[in-house]
Amino acid sequence: MLTLFHSPRSRSTRILDLLHAMKALDRVEIRNVSIPRVDGSGGRDLANPHPEGKVPLLDHDGVHIWESAAIMLYLTDLFPEAGLGVPPGHPQRGRYLSWLFYYGSVVEPVLIHAHAGLDHPVLHVTFRGIPELTARLSTALGKAPWLMGENYTAADLLMASPYHWFTDAVPDDPAIRDWVRRCGNRDSTAAALDHDERLAAELSL
Ligand SMILES: N[C@@H](CCC(=O)N[C@@H](CS)C(=O)NCC(=O)O)C(=O)O
Image 1 (tube, rainbow, N blue to C red):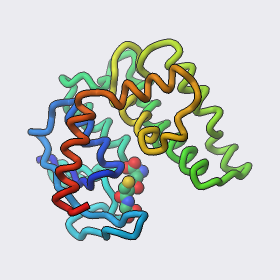
Image 2 (image 1 turned 45 degrees about the horizontal axis):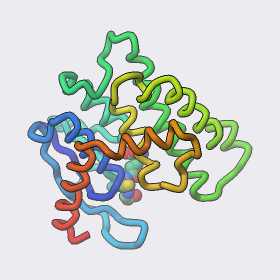
Image 3 (image 1 turned 90 degrees about the horizontal axis):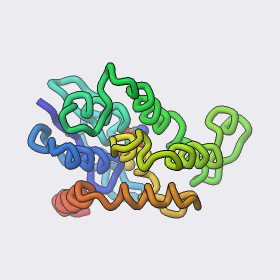
Image 4 (image 1 turned 90 degrees about the vertical axis):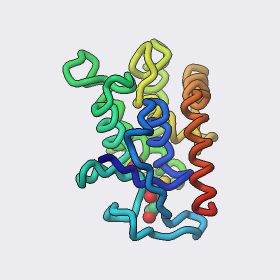
């Protein structure tokens, strides 16, 4: 059995989006939990098994999978027929893994450092910065409409997700701006956001 521990309007919303895009909602139970919010509202939910009380967390028959990129990889591997991932053995598999891991290991730290106004040589040596991230996206999206080429995948969903929250951070590059817009305009994303608002009402958010 698959259970997603989810809280609306959070990083977990992108997992809900993926489940809508994969038409896999009937395969996963969505468990709505509260989390502490930056505005001081909410609070840790004892029903959430994440060791730090965070979301998203996916439970598959008692095994816990945490971190958005790991959950996306796990789900796209589990439901390959949905075509939102790149399966093992495919020549582009390594590229798919690289975008997912680059997100968690580099993109989110770089965007959070910039948002927090943090700048330090050690951070730059370790993660590089916004110009390098912009160049990576610009190069990829200058060649093809999506990060993996001709098809939208979970890599696009994950990599574009922070630009929907930090709209000021969207680079001033026409190919990147167009990609962020196309990622946000998908029917499955609209359905997921609608679903998320219904879940938010349950938690009185
Ligand atoms: N790197 C994790 C981050 C998860 C995370 O920070 N989630 C936030 C929601 S946006 C959370 O649960 N915060 C509650 C807390 O910090 O206690 C991922 O991408 O899954």
